[in-house]
Length: 218
Ligand code: AP5
Ligand code: MG
Image (cartoon, rainbow, N blue to C red):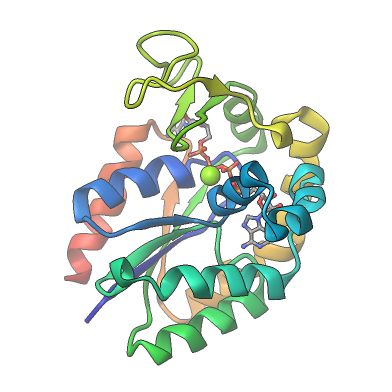
């Protein structure tokens, strides 16, 4: 049976950081809807042009656009054994669409690690985040710095600060999360899929907590 893991949590809590670690350990692909949108923005595709305003304002891209993009990605052969989803679903209707897609593949959501942290922690993490231009590797200037400032340890590419990490946009992203995405916590809790994790712990402690949850799964 394929394994599908959905990372849930507010902006800056560490979904991308943990999803990447888990992908390396399991060999499952890491699918970040935010990374996919940023890739489309960079390449100025038609989808990128639709998404640009929403992403830069910190609002959600409309469901039908987002769902179509993820459906396309999940159809790729590397997802046959499952995937680690980061940033999708983010609304109840996206969650319903995901269930329908996975049913087509005789699969389902198996585990939902939900990371939470106080708003002050989220703000500190986002203001110090640096992202690799080539492949989206994630750093923090204090908590997880690159070996050489401004340069990715893995591929030597330039590090940049995301346009939507400006303080006023971050506050909007947190508000949008609370209004539109937080209802998914209850949605997955009712299905006994939710594993609540204290995202304010350091990176290694968070990893250990969800690896333990994952080991109970198999
Ligand atoms: P997206 O890219 O998904 O942004 P987000 O959910 O706001 O989450 P972030 O990527 O900001 O945070 P993260 O939890 O991944 O934290 P990270 O690991 O980087 O979405 C961007 C935009 O795309 C959305 O606003 C929307 O417009 C659009 N979009 C995406 N998906 C969509 C959808 N499904 N529907 C509609 N629109 C969608 O860590 C943050 C920082 O903290 C880093 O510096 C990291 O080094 C550091 N850090 C991480 N963990 C720790 C730790 N444990 N201790 C100390 N530091 C840590
Ligand atoms: Mg992320």
